[in-house]
Image (tube, rainbow, N blue to C red):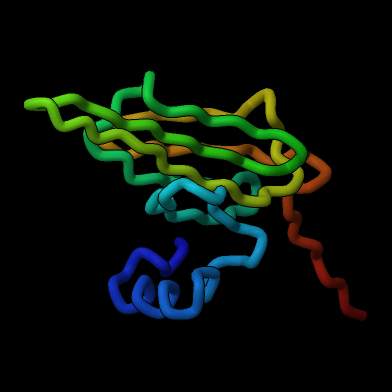
Length: 131
């Protein structure tokens, strides 16, 4: 899993402008706050987990285009005349995912996106022969 979740790592990431433990392809769109995202790459898929407490599925958008996964979360409320609203976003380069089989689940404020890799991209183990 992405180590940027831990407090010390988050402090180092903030100081270095992000991307200390994450690949440089991951970025946040200008003008939006970054989502707290954890990711992992397995042999046959990518797993992306985003913390979105208090948000319903209607406030979330998940898209995959040109090998980039984009997550967007909008929030807003008007309590006692104070309007608070905004947007969180995340975009990351995940090459070779099968767009037709991407699955997104929201449970308990955690969005989990599973992106299966295309067969030709999935890692395989090669047997080494010796004589």
